[in-house]
Image 1 (cartoon, rainbow, N blue to C red):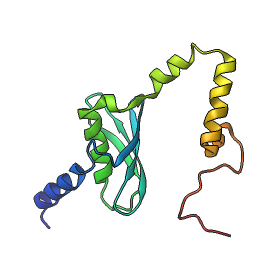
Image 2 (tube, one colour; image 1 turned 90 degrees about the vertical axis):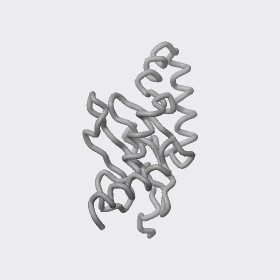
Image 3 (tube, one colour; image 1 turned 60 degrees about the vertical axis):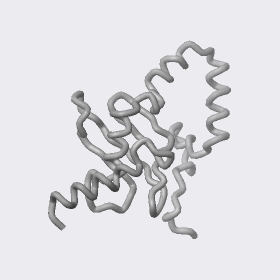
Image 4 (cartoon, helix red, strand yellow; image 1 turned 30 degrees about the vertical axis):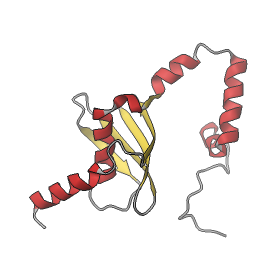
Length: 138
């Protein structure tokens, strides 16, 4: 396949994910954007860091693509450029949390741990690493 043909096909394949319902849990932390994508062969964690000119600095995805950046990362960046308001700005969210009382924050942390026990890994609790399908069963 020629390079021009590959680029056209690649862009077409990325287009199905741009601002689609297949792109979930969109967040922005500084210049890093992340999401979960329901791909053809699984669910992928996709991340990209953008330069000030909004071009890729780097990108990563858990998909099996041999091409980097993959179509999921391209779709993530394009979605952010077209629909930045569809991303939760974590920095703004955290700034809002600064206004809450310690008691309210502890209640929120408790609720978050209940909803996502793997979040305990962020607090250094051993045994709560993310469990993935490809992990071996004992």
